[in-house]
Amino acid sequence: MTQEHFAQRNNVQDSEKQQICAVGIHGWRKRCLYFFLLLLMILILVNLALTIWILKVMNFTIDGMGNLRITPMGLQLAGDSEFLQPLYAKEIQSRPGSPLLLQSSRNVSINILDDRNVPITQLVTGSGGVRSCSKLLEVKSNSGKLLFSADDREIVVGADRLRVPGAEGAVFSRSVETPHIRAEPFKELRLESPTRSLIMEAPKGVQFLAEAGDIQATCRNEMRLESKDGQITLDASKIKLPRLPQGQTSSAGPKQTVFEACVCPNGRLFISPAGTGSTCLTSTSICQ
Image 1 (cartoon, rainbow, N blue to C red):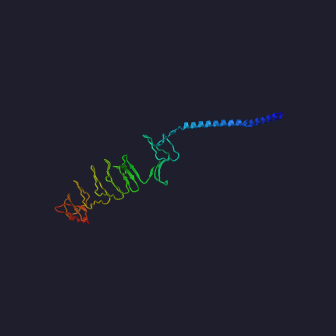
Image 2 (image 1 turned 45 degrees about the vertical axis):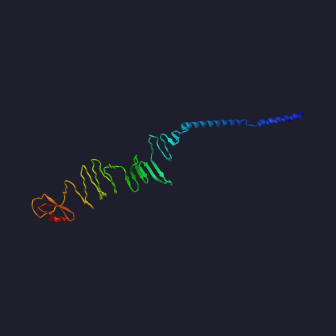
Image 3 (image 1 turned 90 degrees about the vertical axis):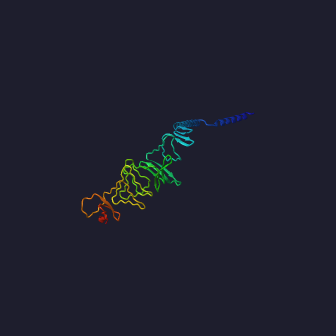
């Protein structure tokens, strides 16, 4: 080869070396890249540390988080819990042998909704009391026996005994149906209607019984004993009618201490001084 060919060849090799050395990141660009890579690694380590710290503080496990555990039956929550928003659940129950406590600073409301999200049954407990709105209210014993039932038509007390310990007793604005009314032992039983009438009816009879005391019936105007198909029997060793009117007789004599009972055609009773014969006819003026 000639010297010119060698010179051209050397020039081509030098230009190729310059082109190869120019490929890549050099200088301040390379330092910035390393700085960003180092900053990214630091952020990843910080995020990983924070994640581990959160998992540790919140007590995350494969079974749940903190006091909240995921079981095959649902969610199990131990300890006190506070709900800031409405809670929707199919069933809420406590652990076996532990009570279930629902506590609120204002009230606790339980609503049953229909398909249109309209409340059909509502139970509200608050500072003003307990209010329940429903079509039917039933209270049953552990054996399933009905103790109390209330709806729009009637109120049923299914217990064997209804006790009213108040000093004023019980006030009923309408009729009461019961097979037995009895006072507590050594207490008086009083049936009273202050401004209206008191009516007691039974298809097979009404019985008044005081085994260790008296029976007293008091009224302001008239007291009427009526038997439509039977009779009225006064069965006692002594029957006293102390305020019967006394008929006047024309005969003068000593003060009479024995009288006979007389009955007017209208059913009125009066007494007349007894004599050798009946003296009722001499006192007929009292029947008018």
